[in-house]
Length: 400
Image 1: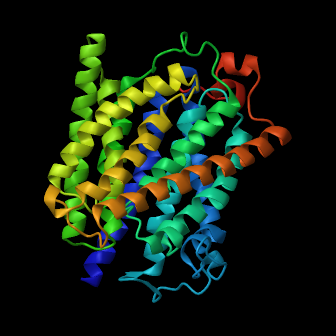
Image 2: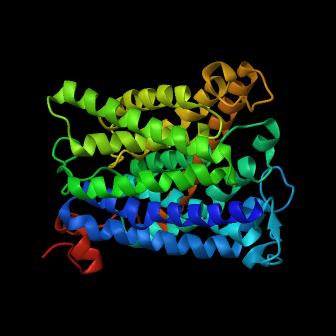
């Protein structure tokens, strides 16, 4: 099965990269004003390139080498010692490196949704690069690299903490420190292209099969079940979100059903290798209800302009999925029963993971953003924001 496993992870690597380029870029691009679509796409594109180089230089080594409880060592910088015959489990290590690189790419790219339409491009690059080294790499080591949370028995199959809570908390912090868009919350223009939102969401949905299914690191039944529950959760959350919106506002929207699908995908991510179809239905339904509600709470009650709802969809979804993994992963709910702890103890372990990752990301993201703010600055000027970042910062137009 070694050849089959390798082939599947190579395929999954391509699928996960598709999620960022072009899936996420188009999804976010459709949600902003027409005068800012170029800025969003280039932010996603540049982050993908920057994260790839950082992952090669030190990110991978800090995440997946050494036996430290909190951070890896530098034994694999520039892939030192990693050749075509080197193995990571059942895979060639260069294949594992590439698969994990696509996760390191999409996680800071997801944060883009929080600060669209008002941030300096240089600030995006500095924050993303520093964040990848100081936040993403340590948390990855804690959970997937044999660190202290892994030793406690944390269950995070494909990134509820590593990816979704991490990016959600970062989004919340940066959005708060950056400040709101002009006119927020009452005079912010609606998404300029629901069609692009759909196209991006559809690419994300398909790519998520590699994201979750590939996290089995094998072409086996666990990968197959991960894909199955991923699809069920997405479909359930999409319909749930659509019906809530329909009942609340009188009309079902394409943006709404697409956003609901993303909420279902984010929420099932940590549980996807542990739960069965019944668990997926429950997770999808709760994702649709809770993430929908949190969009309003964060913007209207907390008064934080997390523009494209990164915390509400990804952060809240990641936490919800992590906590639900403990009960829904049991045989009683049709799960795979892979935990060697009681439901109560597993829930406590999951909760500790949420608190630890949330606090680490909050504190370090705040420090990174503060340093960038005090040095090169965070925000474009009023005229540039009014004109739109496409022409004022990048000298291009998305539409003629």
